[in-house]
Length: 372
Image (cartoon, rainbow, N blue to C red):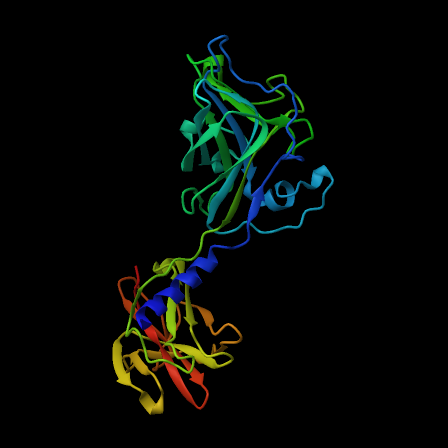
């Protein structure tokens, strides 16, 4: 029973990290209105539309100051940084008219890394694919379709500076199927940032609406992202430890990366009594000392030269019953001079949390991490 509770605490903490700051990648000044304007599409009447690709390219650095709420459209944006590893949670597509023999069709939405070409869209086959999703579009007109993307299906690395979002519409021949991109003439930022490519019409590379003699026409194709939650690393051991005054044991969770070069490990203690002080300990060895020094919990680290305390980073559990620190892998505390040591690839280190608990103290379980 206690084991299940500890795992439930882990799931709750990791799950909550997924709900980070959502950012809308938008370029149209009006991304909800669809007008009956000329929407270019490569056709072969009366056999239906040929294969068409609709594109937008986003500059990650100005998503929040220009594209999130376009300042040039008369709205002062509130900057929100779109940094780190991002996952796409929703894609929205404007539809002026979708008409098929079957009443619906499957279209593909794809996100590409366009960093090498900045704001100049490219033939998708030449770009690194970050992820794609096939979606069933029911016949409709003058609507914006919102497609929910499962977590992790489309992920944008933090090294990607420009993103190309592409809607691929397969050939509607010979069924006489058509698809016209939903557009308006309300302006977009940057200007002329809606693109079409259609190889069967000789448009082998994406062309802007202006180049196709449709100036001022803006297609609705946008997405929403949020940070990818930190993933647990390492293996918990000495689990569960003895209950604290909450009636349950506390748990240590390590998140981030086990790659030494990333230097990205966060230790979090959860399930603590409220408003109590504590800190983390580290050791290259595991051990087991039951209730040392009158503590109400078990000490699960080995002693000796490589036992260290993060007692210079004392935390308080506050109103949530948890605390965390980001540790520096280049300077892990140890008992002997010079007082710290770097963690090297191939080594295993172990961590545990200690905390006050009224008149006594207690420990979390331990976590063991093999670093790469």
